[in-house]
Image (tube, rainbow, N blue to C red):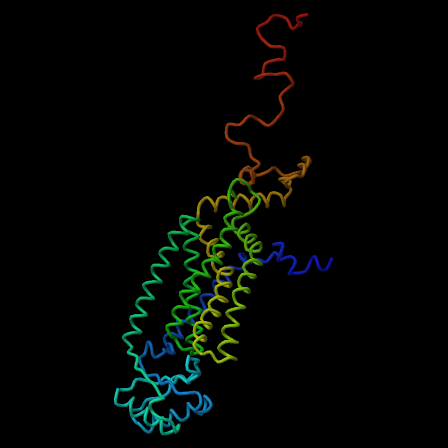
Length: 398
Protein backbone atom coordinates (compact mmCIF):
# COMPACT_ATOMS: atom_id res chain seq x y z
CA UNK A 1 0.00 0.00 0.00
CA UNK A 2 2.88 2.37 0.73
CA UNK A 3 4.21 1.98 -2.81
CA UNK A 4 0.83 2.77 -4.28
CA UNK A 5 0.50 5.96 -2.25
CA UNK A 6 4.06 7.17 -2.93
CA UNK A 7 4.59 10.59 -4.50
CA UNK A 8 6.12 9.22 -7.70
CA UNK A 9 3.20 6.83 -8.20
CA UNK A 10 0.66 9.58 -7.56
CA UNK A 11 2.50 11.88 -9.98
CA UNK A 12 2.28 9.25 -12.71
CA UNK A 13 -1.46 8.89 -12.11
CA UNK A 14 -1.98 12.65 -11.90
CA UNK A 15 -3.20 12.33 -8.33
CA UNK A 16 -0.48 14.22 -6.46
CA UNK A 17 -2.92 17.04 -5.65
CA UNK A 18 -0.27 19.78 -5.79
CA UNK A 19 -1.96 23.15 -5.35
CA UNK A 20 -0.13 25.17 -8.01
CA UNK A 21 -2.98 27.50 -8.99
CA UNK A 22 -4.01 28.20 -5.39
CA UNK A 23 -0.54 29.58 -4.69
CA UNK A 24 -0.30 31.67 -7.85
CA UNK A 25 0.22 34.90 -5.91
CA UNK A 26 3.36 33.34 -4.43
CA UNK A 27 4.66 32.33 -7.87
CA UNK A 28 3.88 35.77 -9.29
CA UNK A 29 5.75 37.39 -6.39
CA UNK A 30 8.78 35.14 -6.89
CA UNK A 31 8.73 35.80 -10.65
CA UNK A 32 8.55 39.57 -10.10
CA UNK A 33 11.45 39.42 -7.64
CA UNK A 34 13.60 37.41 -10.06
CA UNK A 35 12.80 39.81 -12.91
CA UNK A 36 13.80 42.80 -10.76
CA UNK A 37 17.02 41.02 -9.77
CA UNK A 38 17.80 40.27 -13.43
CA UNK A 39 17.10 43.86 -14.50
CA UNK A 40 19.26 45.14 -11.66
CA UNK A 41 22.08 42.88 -12.82
CA UNK A 42 21.65 44.11 -16.39
CA UNK A 43 22.06 47.69 -15.22
CA UNK A 44 24.91 47.20 -12.74
CA UNK A 45 26.96 44.29 -14.09
CA UNK A 46 25.92 44.13 -17.71
CA UNK A 47 27.14 41.21 -19.84
CA UNK A 48 30.55 39.72 -20.48
CA UNK A 49 30.60 40.10 -24.24
CA UNK A 50 32.84 37.94 -26.39
CA UNK A 51 35.14 39.52 -28.94
CA UNK A 52 32.50 38.88 -31.64
CA UNK A 53 30.35 41.55 -29.94
CA UNK A 54 32.91 43.75 -28.18
CA UNK A 55 35.63 43.46 -30.79
CA UNK A 56 39.10 42.06 -30.18
CA UNK A 57 41.86 39.74 -31.40
CA UNK A 58 42.33 35.99 -31.20
CA UNK A 59 45.58 34.01 -31.41
CA UNK A 60 45.94 30.27 -32.03
CA UNK A 61 49.00 28.76 -30.36
CA UNK A 62 50.08 25.08 -30.68
CA UNK A 63 49.16 23.10 -27.56
CA UNK A 64 52.69 21.64 -27.49
CA UNK A 65 54.03 24.82 -25.86
CA UNK A 66 52.79 23.78 -22.39
CA UNK A 67 49.69 23.76 -20.24
CA UNK A 68 46.75 26.11 -20.66
CA UNK A 69 47.68 28.05 -17.50
CA UNK A 70 51.31 28.46 -18.59
CA UNK A 71 50.17 29.66 -22.00
CA UNK A 72 47.87 32.29 -20.51
CA UNK A 73 50.62 33.64 -18.25
CA UNK A 74 53.12 33.94 -21.13
CA UNK A 75 50.54 35.63 -23.38
CA UNK A 76 49.87 38.20 -20.63
CA UNK A 77 53.63 38.83 -20.40
CA UNK A 78 53.80 39.28 -24.19
CA UNK A 79 50.89 41.76 -24.11
CA UNK A 80 52.60 43.74 -21.35
CA UNK A 81 55.87 43.81 -23.30
CA UNK A 82 54.15 44.96 -26.49
CA UNK A 83 52.36 47.78 -24.67
CA UNK A 84 48.99 49.22 -25.57
CA UNK A 85 47.20 48.08 -22.39
CA UNK A 86 45.57 45.02 -23.98
CA UNK A 87 44.64 42.06 -21.76
CA UNK A 88 43.56 38.44 -22.09
CA UNK A 89 39.78 37.90 -22.20
CA UNK A 90 39.52 34.11 -22.49
CA UNK A 91 41.80 31.14 -23.07
CA UNK A 92 40.57 27.71 -24.15
CA UNK A 93 41.86 24.54 -25.77
CA UNK A 94 40.38 23.77 -29.17
CA UNK A 95 40.83 20.73 -31.39
CA UNK A 96 41.59 21.09 -35.07
CA UNK A 97 42.60 19.06 -38.13
CA UNK A 98 46.27 19.68 -37.44
CA UNK A 99 46.01 18.90 -33.71
CA UNK A 100 44.98 20.74 -30.59
CA UNK A 101 45.81 24.37 -30.06
CA UNK A 102 45.12 27.11 -27.52
CA UNK A 103 42.85 29.94 -28.60
CA UNK A 104 43.63 33.12 -26.70
CA UNK A 105 41.28 36.06 -27.07
CA UNK A 106 42.37 39.56 -26.16
CA UNK A 107 40.92 43.04 -26.19
CA UNK A 108 41.16 45.21 -29.30
CA UNK A 109 44.64 45.59 -30.83
CA UNK A 110 45.76 47.54 -33.83
CA UNK A 111 47.43 45.67 -36.71
CA UNK A 112 50.87 46.87 -35.61
CA UNK A 113 50.24 45.88 -31.99
CA UNK A 114 48.98 42.46 -33.05
CA UNK A 115 52.23 41.79 -34.97
CA UNK A 116 54.32 42.93 -32.00
CA UNK A 117 52.34 40.63 -29.64
CA UNK A 118 52.76 37.68 -32.01
CA UNK A 119 56.53 38.29 -32.09
CA UNK A 120 56.70 38.54 -28.30
CA UNK A 121 54.67 35.33 -27.88
CA UNK A 122 56.96 33.46 -30.27
CA UNK A 123 59.91 34.64 -28.20
CA UNK A 124 58.23 33.62 -24.92
CA UNK A 125 57.34 30.14 -26.19
CA UNK A 126 60.55 29.63 -28.14
CA UNK A 127 58.76 28.79 -31.39
CA UNK A 128 58.56 30.23 -34.90
CA UNK A 129 56.19 33.19 -35.19
CA UNK A 130 54.70 31.59 -38.32
CA UNK A 131 53.19 28.80 -36.17
CA UNK A 132 51.06 31.37 -34.35
CA UNK A 133 48.03 32.52 -36.31
CA UNK A 134 45.78 35.41 -35.42
CA UNK A 135 42.80 37.36 -36.62
CA UNK A 136 40.93 40.49 -35.69
CA UNK A 137 37.17 40.73 -35.12
CA UNK A 138 35.32 44.01 -35.44
CA UNK A 139 32.45 44.80 -33.08
CA UNK A 140 30.39 45.82 -36.12
CA UNK A 141 30.01 42.14 -36.96
CA UNK A 142 28.63 41.49 -33.48
CA UNK A 143 26.10 44.30 -33.83
CA UNK A 144 24.84 42.73 -37.08
CA UNK A 145 24.42 39.37 -35.32
CA UNK A 146 22.51 41.07 -32.49
CA UNK A 147 20.14 42.96 -34.78
CA UNK A 148 19.35 39.85 -36.82
CA UNK A 149 18.81 37.81 -33.65
CA UNK A 150 16.36 40.42 -32.32
CA UNK A 151 14.53 40.43 -35.67
CA UNK A 152 14.31 36.64 -35.56
CA UNK A 153 12.97 36.81 -31.98
CA UNK A 154 10.24 39.29 -32.95
CA UNK A 155 9.19 37.16 -35.94
CA UNK A 156 9.17 34.00 -33.80
CA UNK A 157 6.97 35.57 -31.11
CA UNK A 158 4.55 36.95 -33.74
CA UNK A 159 4.20 33.53 -35.39
CA UNK A 160 3.74 31.88 -32.00
CA UNK A 161 1.01 34.36 -31.04
CA UNK A 162 -0.91 33.67 -34.25
CA UNK A 163 -0.57 29.90 -33.85
CA UNK A 164 -1.69 29.88 -30.22
CA UNK A 165 -4.67 32.14 -30.93
CA UNK A 166 -5.79 29.82 -33.72
CA UNK A 167 -5.04 26.65 -31.73
CA UNK A 168 -6.34 27.81 -28.33
CA UNK A 169 -7.41 31.41 -27.59
CA UNK A 170 -5.87 34.83 -27.08
CA UNK A 171 -5.56 34.47 -23.29
CA UNK A 172 -3.52 31.30 -23.69
CA UNK A 173 -1.38 33.07 -26.29
CA UNK A 174 -0.68 35.96 -23.90
CA UNK A 175 0.16 33.58 -21.03
CA UNK A 176 2.44 31.44 -23.21
CA UNK A 177 4.36 34.40 -24.68
CA UNK A 178 4.73 35.91 -21.21
CA UNK A 179 6.25 32.62 -20.08
CA UNK A 180 8.68 32.68 -23.04
CA UNK A 181 9.77 36.25 -22.26
CA UNK A 182 10.20 35.33 -18.60
CA UNK A 183 12.34 32.39 -19.67
CA UNK A 184 14.61 34.64 -21.75
CA UNK A 185 14.93 37.27 -19.02
CA UNK A 186 15.82 34.73 -16.31
CA UNK A 187 18.35 32.93 -18.51
CA UNK A 188 19.95 36.24 -19.47
CA UNK A 189 19.94 37.19 -15.77
CA UNK A 190 21.92 34.04 -14.92
CA UNK A 191 24.45 34.96 -17.61
CA UNK A 192 24.77 38.49 -16.26
CA UNK A 193 25.06 37.49 -12.58
CA UNK A 194 27.58 34.68 -13.09
CA UNK A 195 29.54 36.51 -15.79
CA UNK A 196 29.26 33.89 -18.54
CA UNK A 197 30.67 35.11 -21.86
CA UNK A 198 28.08 35.96 -24.50
CA UNK A 199 29.04 34.65 -27.95
CA UNK A 200 27.15 33.93 -31.20
CA UNK A 201 26.66 30.38 -29.90
CA UNK A 202 24.87 31.88 -26.90
CA UNK A 203 22.50 33.77 -29.19
CA UNK A 204 21.76 30.58 -31.13
CA UNK A 205 21.10 28.80 -27.83
CA UNK A 206 18.64 31.50 -26.76
CA UNK A 207 16.63 31.06 -29.94
CA UNK A 208 16.74 27.27 -29.51
CA UNK A 209 15.32 27.21 -25.99
CA UNK A 210 12.29 29.20 -27.17
CA UNK A 211 11.10 26.19 -29.15
CA UNK A 212 11.54 23.86 -26.17
CA UNK A 213 9.78 26.28 -23.81
CA UNK A 214 6.88 26.64 -26.25
CA UNK A 215 6.50 22.85 -26.51
CA UNK A 216 6.35 22.52 -22.72
CA UNK A 217 3.65 25.21 -22.44
CA UNK A 218 1.55 23.72 -25.25
CA UNK A 219 1.59 20.29 -23.54
CA UNK A 220 0.12 21.79 -20.36
CA UNK A 221 -2.35 24.06 -22.17
CA UNK A 222 -3.64 21.18 -24.26
CA UNK A 223 -4.60 19.36 -21.05
CA UNK A 224 -6.10 22.53 -19.59
CA UNK A 225 -8.28 22.93 -22.68
CA UNK A 226 -9.39 19.31 -22.42
CA UNK A 227 -10.35 19.67 -18.74
CA UNK A 228 -12.16 22.99 -19.15
CA UNK A 229 -14.12 22.23 -22.32
CA UNK A 230 -17.80 22.85 -21.49
CA UNK A 231 -16.97 23.63 -17.86
CA UNK A 232 -19.75 26.20 -17.50
CA UNK A 233 -22.37 23.48 -18.12
CA UNK A 234 -21.83 21.99 -14.66
CA UNK A 235 -21.19 23.26 -11.15
CA UNK A 236 -18.57 20.76 -10.02
CA UNK A 237 -15.27 22.67 -10.54
CA UNK A 238 -14.08 26.21 -10.89
CA UNK A 239 -11.86 27.06 -13.85
CA UNK A 240 -8.82 27.30 -11.57
CA UNK A 241 -9.46 23.85 -10.10
CA UNK A 242 -9.79 22.28 -13.54
CA UNK A 243 -6.55 23.98 -14.64
CA UNK A 244 -4.78 22.82 -11.47
CA UNK A 245 -5.91 19.25 -12.19
CA UNK A 246 -4.48 19.59 -15.70
CA UNK A 247 -1.10 20.62 -14.25
CA UNK A 248 -1.06 17.60 -11.97
CA UNK A 249 -2.02 15.31 -14.85
CA UNK A 250 0.68 16.65 -17.19
CA UNK A 251 3.38 17.34 -14.57
CA UNK A 252 5.09 13.97 -14.88
CA UNK A 253 5.08 14.17 -18.67
CA UNK A 254 6.67 17.63 -18.58
CA UNK A 255 9.21 16.46 -16.01
CA UNK A 256 10.15 13.41 -18.06
CA UNK A 257 10.51 15.53 -21.21
CA UNK A 258 12.73 18.04 -19.42
CA UNK A 259 14.94 15.39 -17.83
CA UNK A 260 15.37 13.54 -21.14
CA UNK A 261 16.30 16.83 -22.84
CA UNK A 262 18.65 17.97 -20.07
CA UNK A 263 20.64 14.73 -19.91
CA UNK A 264 22.34 15.05 -23.35
CA UNK A 265 22.74 18.80 -22.92
CA UNK A 266 24.31 18.20 -19.50
CA UNK A 267 26.65 15.65 -21.09
CA UNK A 268 27.56 18.18 -23.76
CA UNK A 269 28.30 20.81 -21.13
CA UNK A 270 29.91 18.92 -18.25
CA UNK A 271 31.62 16.09 -20.11
CA UNK A 272 32.32 17.63 -23.52
CA UNK A 273 33.29 21.12 -22.36
CA UNK A 274 34.31 20.37 -18.77
CA UNK A 275 36.19 17.07 -18.85
CA UNK A 276 37.23 16.79 -22.49
CA UNK A 277 38.01 20.48 -22.89
CA UNK A 278 35.87 21.10 -25.96
CA UNK A 279 35.60 24.82 -25.31
CA UNK A 280 33.51 25.56 -28.39
CA UNK A 281 30.66 23.48 -26.88
CA UNK A 282 30.58 25.41 -23.61
CA UNK A 283 28.66 28.46 -24.79
CA UNK A 284 25.92 26.52 -26.56
CA UNK A 285 25.63 23.83 -23.87
CA UNK A 286 25.44 26.37 -21.06
CA UNK A 287 22.58 28.42 -22.45
CA UNK A 288 20.63 25.29 -23.42
CA UNK A 289 21.01 23.75 -19.96
CA UNK A 290 19.97 26.89 -18.07
CA UNK A 291 17.18 27.76 -20.52
CA UNK A 292 15.60 24.28 -20.56
CA UNK A 293 15.62 24.05 -16.77
CA UNK A 294 13.99 27.48 -16.47
CA UNK A 295 11.47 26.60 -19.22
CA UNK A 296 10.13 23.66 -17.21
CA UNK A 297 9.57 25.86 -14.17
CA UNK A 298 7.96 28.75 -16.03
CA UNK A 299 5.57 26.48 -17.96
CA UNK A 300 4.26 25.01 -14.69
CA UNK A 301 4.52 27.86 -12.18
CA UNK A 302 3.90 30.89 -14.41
CA UNK A 303 2.09 30.15 -17.68
CA UNK A 304 -0.94 28.27 -16.32
CA UNK A 305 -1.44 30.44 -13.19
CA UNK A 306 -1.28 33.52 -15.43
CA UNK A 307 -3.86 31.93 -17.74
CA UNK A 308 -6.21 31.34 -14.79
CA UNK A 309 -5.76 34.94 -13.64
CA UNK A 310 -6.72 36.17 -17.12
CA UNK A 311 -9.69 33.78 -17.43
CA UNK A 312 -11.07 34.89 -14.07
CA UNK A 313 -11.73 38.30 -15.64
CA UNK A 314 -14.08 36.67 -18.17
CA UNK A 315 -17.71 37.37 -17.04
CA UNK A 316 -18.78 33.83 -18.00
CA UNK A 317 -16.03 32.27 -15.89
CA UNK A 318 -16.74 34.68 -13.03
CA UNK A 319 -20.42 33.69 -13.00
CA UNK A 320 -19.52 30.00 -13.23
CA UNK A 321 -17.08 30.22 -10.31
CA UNK A 322 -19.75 31.96 -8.20
CA UNK A 323 -22.27 29.23 -8.97
CA UNK A 324 -19.78 26.52 -7.98
CA UNK A 325 -18.90 28.22 -4.69
CA UNK A 326 -22.55 28.98 -3.91
CA UNK A 327 -23.54 25.37 -4.51
CA UNK A 328 -20.77 24.16 -2.23
CA UNK A 329 -21.94 26.56 0.44
CA UNK A 330 -25.48 25.27 0.08
CA UNK A 331 -24.26 21.66 0.30
CA UNK A 332 -22.29 22.52 3.42
CA UNK A 333 -25.38 24.02 5.04
CA UNK A 334 -27.47 21.02 4.04
CA UNK A 335 -29.70 23.04 1.72
CA UNK A 336 -28.67 21.03 -1.32
CA UNK A 337 -27.82 17.33 -1.42
CA UNK A 338 -24.47 16.40 -2.94
CA UNK A 339 -24.55 14.87 -6.40
CA UNK A 340 -25.75 11.25 -6.24
CA UNK A 341 -27.23 11.62 -2.73
CA UNK A 342 -30.99 11.83 -2.09
CA UNK A 343 -32.09 15.19 -0.67
CA UNK A 344 -32.78 15.36 3.08
CA UNK A 345 -36.40 15.60 4.13
CA UNK A 346 -37.41 18.95 5.51
CA UNK A 347 -37.68 19.21 9.29
CA UNK A 348 -40.20 21.45 11.11
CA UNK A 349 -37.43 23.57 12.67
CA UNK A 350 -35.48 24.09 9.39
CA UNK A 351 -34.80 27.68 8.39
CA UNK A 352 -36.29 28.79 5.06
CA UNK A 353 -33.91 28.63 2.09
CA UNK A 354 -32.79 31.96 0.70
CA UNK A 355 -34.13 32.11 -2.89
CA UNK A 356 -31.06 33.99 -4.16
CA UNK A 357 -28.65 31.41 -2.71
CA UNK A 358 -30.75 28.61 -4.04
CA UNK A 359 -30.74 30.16 -7.49
CA UNK A 360 -26.96 30.46 -7.49
CA UNK A 361 -26.71 26.87 -6.27
CA UNK A 362 -28.76 25.68 -9.20
CA UNK A 363 -31.82 24.50 -7.19
CA UNK A 364 -34.30 27.37 -7.67
CA UNK A 365 -37.03 26.88 -10.29
CA UNK A 366 -36.73 28.83 -13.50
CA UNK A 367 -38.93 31.83 -14.09
CA UNK A 368 -42.27 30.71 -15.56
CA UNK A 369 -41.78 27.05 -14.60
CA UNK A 370 -44.69 25.00 -13.24
CA UNK A 371 -44.86 24.35 -9.50
CA UNK A 372 -42.84 21.38 -8.38
CA UNK A 373 -45.80 19.64 -6.65
CA UNK A 374 -47.32 16.51 -8.22
CA UNK A 375 -50.58 16.70 -10.03
CA UNK A 376 -53.28 14.17 -9.29
CA UNK A 377 -53.01 11.07 -11.41
CA UNK A 378 -54.99 11.45 -14.58
CA UNK A 379 -55.59 15.19 -14.17
CA UNK A 380 -54.86 17.46 -17.08
CA UNK A 381 -54.54 21.17 -16.80
CA UNK A 382 -56.40 21.21 -13.44
CA UNK A 383 -59.51 19.50 -14.80
CA UNK A 384 -61.04 16.58 -12.93
CA UNK A 385 -60.16 13.11 -14.01
CA UNK A 386 -62.45 11.60 -16.52
CA UNK A 387 -62.33 14.26 -19.21
CA UNK A 388 -64.86 16.92 -20.14
CA UNK A 389 -65.93 19.09 -17.28
CA UNK A 390 -69.22 20.02 -19.06
CA UNK A 391 -70.41 16.46 -19.25
CA UNK A 392 -73.37 15.92 -16.89
CA UNK A 393 -72.97 13.50 -14.08
CA UNK A 394 -69.82 11.87 -12.95
CA UNK A 395 -70.80 8.33 -13.93
CA UNK A 396 -68.46 6.42 -16.10
CA UNK A 397 -69.61 5.02 -19.40
CA UNK A 398 -69.74 1.29 -19.46
